Image (cartoon, rainbow, N blue to C red; front, side, top):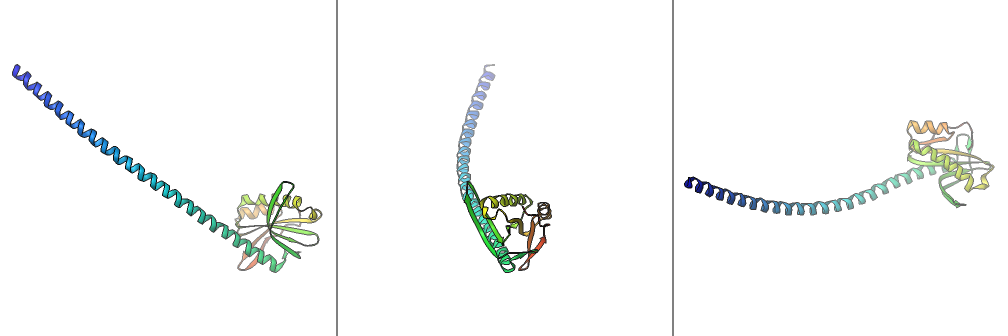
Length: 199
């Protein structure tokens, strides 16, 4: 039995040595893996930083393009209104663009305003006029009356003007008695004339 006990002890010792060696290799592999993961985390962090910078740059570019498209739409509508000086059966003798005013804590800007001796038409221009922008025009009409009390006795009309006008936008504009303007080629096209209900 001593022989078997001695052999078992020797095998236990060899097995323990192999397990220790294996554990040592596993620890070394874990340490190498941890080092690789740390390097990878650093690379990912640098990549994220670079990506954030690029996304901000792209955001500025897209914002600039969007602003330019909006300004182009305003320019086209302004030129068309200047050329015709009439919308529907209303004829105007003066036109203002980007009319900005601050008074009594109220501030607003009006894209295009046409006036004659008894009426003013406030035109809000968007490249694509979304339905939720229509109610903003009503607020602008209220602000116009407050900011320009000289026109208190005038009939004040509102208009939405867009290169792209979804059907829902047109329907809402009609509901709120607003003129609806678009462009057809280089010409101003009137899509809706309200029943002369001023605001």
